[in-house]
Image: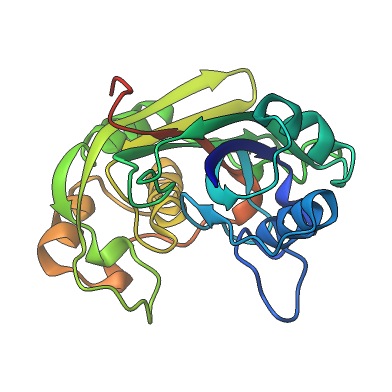
Length: 249
């Protein structure tokens, strides 16, 4: 029995997110089916975390226990021959038995893509949030820095979420402008449900002049979801990297 860690790249446009559901096609479900076809085993895959329907991943991480003796280095090529073209296994490695893709992770980094243009992009419609009005980039960059540090992110969590603690630490929060595209980089030790998308929605509203930067501090203090901005759409969201103890933050 081997504990196998895989790294996965996927286009989430046609999926109901990462996690297996009864009434929807998911990334986890497709990989589970491919493993069953390849090995004949009923395998449980543990992902580093969920991604929403329509969201993407450049480097999702998962692990599973495998009894089949197929060489680890052959797994990516073999699985990619079965998986649909919008899911790719980019790496596989045997890891210690106590490694768990979610519980062993110490941080994650997300990238959010905003397309700022009067007209929508036919090519980027599934990979960006189209904002047709001019944004104030300097205000957004100033506001983004306010998320760095340890805060109570209760106001930046989707309503109805059931978690015990809402305090998280953000190590990186930055915005890079490249032509009509704005890329928001957020790295932290953990994220609440829809947290990144709500942070992005808040930054957009600040960029449009609908909110002031001091509302962020008030949101931390009051903890009311109504204090933060809207939830940005999922298609602009990419899971960029999952960090483990051996990685440098």
